[in-house]
Image 1 (cartoon, one colour):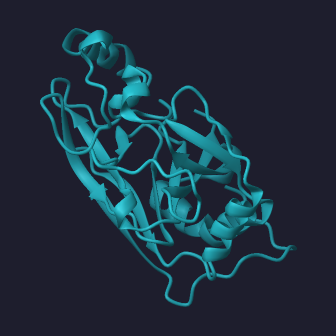
Image 2: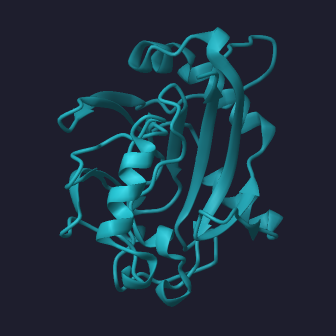
Length: 239
């Protein structure tokens, strides 16, 4: 994640604080930041004013809107050293950084089977995902999981076919219950859970098994002001 120095940026919040958790048997780092940026509510207003969210890819159960360039620039400037130190990220590995506003709006009955289970974003352990919550705890945070039968908490290229085969035997698509993952079940154990707090940011490796905490009584509110608005940032890297 490269650092630049010649442009204005959004200041850090005066009460910026962070910690690093090491989660599960694999001791994977999760960077947890509270009170990330000053005046974070202006991001909510930006999303509200833009209005037109677009359908996301086939994996995300909702809609997305590109983040303003200033946000992405500020993210990289402020967190460059912290991300490098926490995850061992080197500038020469980074191939791109992308950020989008995201909102979960798909009701359970319309979910694809894969959207009902914990997932991984990439098998490349160098790549990172960040969730910046622009909503409160009622909207649900994010959890990390262990697949019980394989004991996997992360999925790399070598593990992927083993994991896929095991999961297909346990839970063929037609048997996957149409609901959001929210806590442990017979196939996955929740190994860490992070509550949504306004202006909280969490960062973890893309190959961690994870899922949003979407409760059975979740209100699929499409309004950025009152729904589950997050800013999701991905740091892409060479394997």
